Image 1 (cartoon, rainbow, N blue to C red):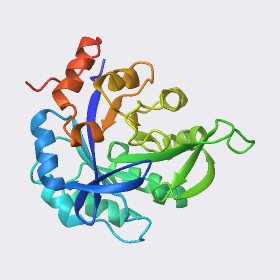
Image 2 (image 1 turned 180 degrees about the vertical axis):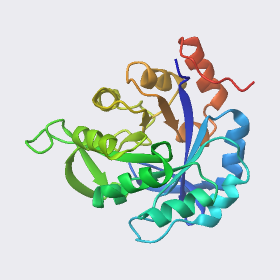
Image 3 (image 1 turned 180 degrees about the horizontal axis):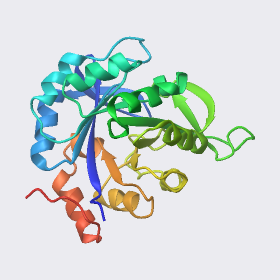
Image 4 (image 1 turned 120 degrees about the horizontal axis):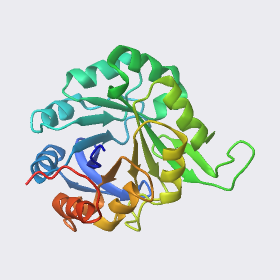
Length: 259
């Protein structure tokens, strides 16, 4: 059995670490390089770095921040936001990341997922899914719709259908973020996470809503996720990576203990 992972998300805007609730009200909470190093030392399994306004502003990612973070940590590191071509993916990987995360660009140009997987391997391609709960319709029968550009634009895509397509295109992993739960600390959207995990045969990362270590345990058990992504609960010092992993271990979940 593979170990379940605890992944720390660093949302970056204008080169600074930021955090909001439901993609709004973001506040500056520090330096992403220093934070990445601290989380690496605390036992995080992976770091995810999102340039949260790059896609909406139609610009490239801040590669200098990627390079600085990569020099400080020695665990898998993925980068998303503003990655819109195979050339962008190559630049991010050469800057030191192990994975690239495609979100808005994948919806706009699905074949980018295939081209990235062909060029760098499926293990290097993560598709980020920002999902909004909506009334079920003929086009969105699951009641979960994909939104892009930081939650600003609805697409009409059903989340489960999109998850299956991304797997078929060659994505190696899906990061499923509930906009409704994002930053609330009320727990992950377990119904969504489980539905996606059951729909595909690739790892699924639960994202959005962690408020205490118990929520991570729920995500990887009830939710069926391979990993749980955290942000607010560690950024604001409420809980440590160690506390999260100890909760997983106490719940009978295999995880990497780095102490």
